[in-house]
Amino acid sequence: MFCCICQKDLSECTCTNLEDRLDRAVVGGGFVYKSCKKCGKHYDRCKCEKPEWEIKHQPKGSGN
Image 1 (cartoon, rainbow, N blue to C red):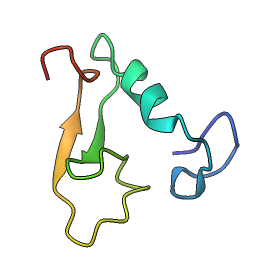
Image 2 (cartoon, rainbow, N blue to C red):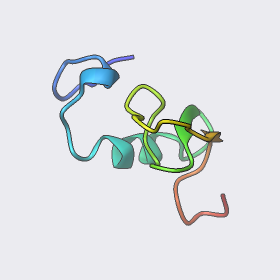
Image 3 (cartoon, helix red, strand yellow):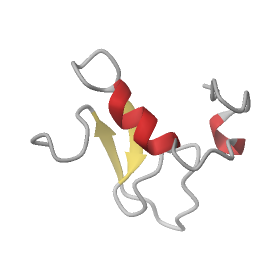
Image 4 (spheres, rainbow, N blue to C red):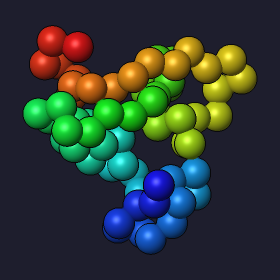
């Protein structure tokens, strides 16, 4: 998966608003992604030593 803004793989993406854009993409249930509960980042961007994974299927604050 790559970022449409910086044209880099998500693991190398430098955009500061990537997680916000991913959260907006899950509205309506047409897109889901794996993220870390600890840092809130997409799994490709997580740098946690022991991440706790979850599946994002709704934006923050909408009953998740």
